Image 1 (cartoon, rainbow, N blue to C red):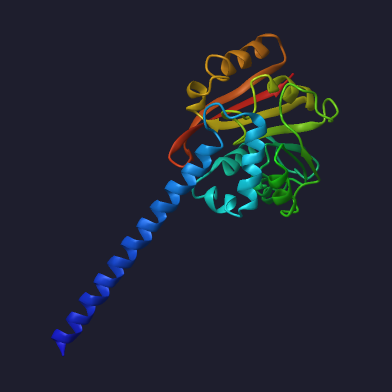
Image 2 (cartoon, one colour):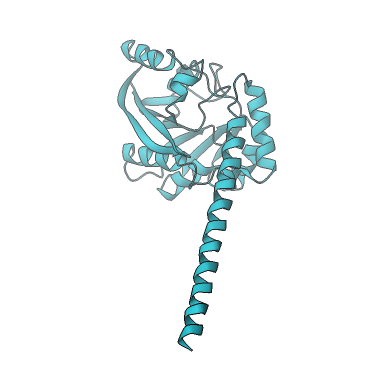
Length: 246
């Protein structure tokens, strides 16, 4: 009887080990597929119009939220934590703009922290429709964040936040001027992005941080902090820039 029980236990252990191995392999395959999908949105030479269309197709495939969930992409949570540290309770009267809102991950995170006046901006119609279903946004605007003046009044927001909107073919350096315009004096511009893009994206290399510094020297804003965080997206480090408008 004891030999039989030992044998059954060994079989169960082998089966459990095999199940764990298959689960790990499946997870690794999904990570590779999700990484490849995300890479497609940031491929070299992609135009902003192609970016918007790519995200729309990704949203319509119903795979975006699985591919870029919080276990792989921590940007929205990191950004929401930053904003909640900058703006104390009560937060329900603070106006926030979620730039490159995507399907609404950041909007959800902000909502859980007590923010209630959240607008979203994204150039992808498919992502806008996905974000609308979250029921956390007061207004959703389908437009590009660029040097072009948006249909938003000057000095509107207590904070404008970018999480995941920086990259090849995404938000250009010149958009910083528009971010400053629409945030209130004393309000914040929060940008969370992959650290490597500072070197690998042509529009940012030797341009983005120098422009940030130039805007500080000219008295447009003051840097609050610059901080590198691990595992921002997949295994890649992120960098957080926080500036306060003068």
